[in-house]
Length: 78
Length: 154
Image (cartoon, rainbow over all chains, first blue to last red; front, side, top):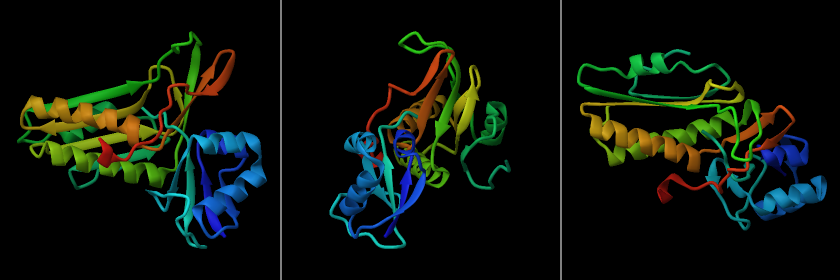
């Protein structure tokens, strides 16, 4: 179980900003989130970066209850 | 918002931005150059939509931490730089209002201009922020989005 943080278009597609999701790796957490939120969210994830605790992560990285997995779609600040 | 005692002032907040106050904060006796860049909400999009307002989303802690990496990278490249302020709005921003302000103060103009240019470009390519355009006839996330890069890649 990890904290999930969804921002910008990822939040829109999921309908939530924060959630708690099962999974012991980044990939497992994201797969569980896709199962929960559906294909529109999967489309956003496909073009997004994944961060754990504020740093870029890959799908195989292990995560636990204190970790925050963030889904970051392409950015548009400024 | 209280100015910091340090030579960095980073903020991501829903409060209106005050470029003059940031420039005044950055002004130091040793600095002959203070460059201010304002990125303002524009009234039209490339696709021709009329914009009512922009609405920015971010996680404040993640965005401020990443902006801190940007200012550190600017100092590495231009060690002469004295003070840097980077503020970005979240939430609604009306047309003509600044969504982002970058201020760089340094002894001479060259490094102030260069560092300010680096900072705004880095904000746009490395800081997790999302712009939703609210049009007169609809709304959409900005079509100008780019995959987020790490500051170390710049």
